[in-house]
Amino acid sequence: MTEQRPLDPDALKMFSFGIFSKLEGAVTAGMIHLGDRLGLYEVMASSIDGDTSESLAAKAGLHERWVREWLHNQVAARIVSCADLSNNHPIFHLSPEGVAVLASPNHPAYGMGMFHRLPQTMGSLNAMPEAFRTGVGHNYDSHGPEGAVGIERSFEPWNQNFLIPLVIPALEGVKEKLDAGVRVADIGCGAGGAALLMGSTFPNSTVDGFDISKFALERAEERKSESGVHNVSFFDPREHPIADDHSYDLICTFDCIHDMTKPTEMMKTIRKALKNDGTWLLVDIKAQESLELNVSKNPMASLLYGISVLSCMSSAMSEAGGEGLGTLGLSASRAESMAREAGFTQFKKLDVEHSVNAFYEVRP
Image (tube, rainbow, N blue to C red; front, top):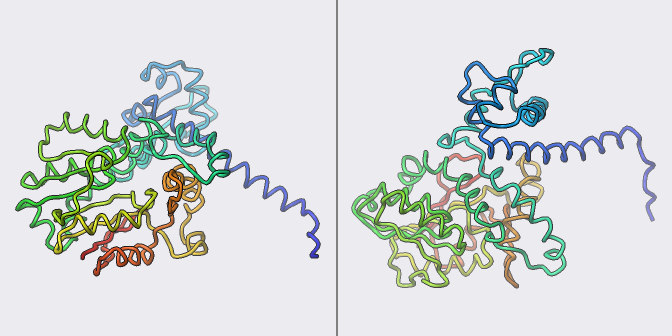
């Protein structure tokens, strides 16, 4: 039996520091959620000369003492800046980069979606012990309507900027078909942003969005009414099954295959729904082939594995017998192998750069 080495006091200090730095990140994430929810970042973004705690509180209609303590967290976390912390009334600024990430919903770098649903995501911790014991997780509706809005805010800034000008043209012959008028399915459509964008851009085509989240579908219908787009429809596939008559010219799945309880079955469903000369645009989390590669090559691996437990894998295990791919479970080789087993013969990674996602063109 190998004896454990003696405790190293210096290593103990560093280990403790590392552990509590994770807690600092979690607490500061909560402060970012509050800043977003209270509109503080938007106010700061509009203040060219910066704000004191008094002026920021006044503009936001909030109590100064609470805003002051929040600002102290933000400057300590180096999220906002202050040139002179010794001043009795320091002036705080949000950098141009901070404005893009924290206060610009149309910027592709906007990052408030995950923070929007942070309370619901962390609230899942209460259900996790039972999930670990039984093996059965919880679907996205367990996060409530704010969970659906958070997903919407997470992915739409990039889609709004790049889906039409960059991704669709990268698919061979697809833009021309969409211009002429074809049938499109967006499976796992969420709150409908991509479906409505494609529908409004290509009025001659029809788009069917499918999702099993009642909160996402309610939000999608609300946004459809607001948009005035008439060539897009939304369905729950349990009530309105996806067609199995090879009638779709383009099928899209955006960041959802790894969340599904039965992704293998879904790929077979997609093949039955797709025309023999059709295209499947598969977009999913950029995953490496092994734990070793994910940990060594992805600085956000710990975040993604943690989110998987609380959200993605939980969804993928929300039924008994769920396959449980999880956030980093669909590498390129695994996606290709599963697609070929489902009846597809062509699989190509698109030359589209994204910090989180990989893009694949899959054909029968």
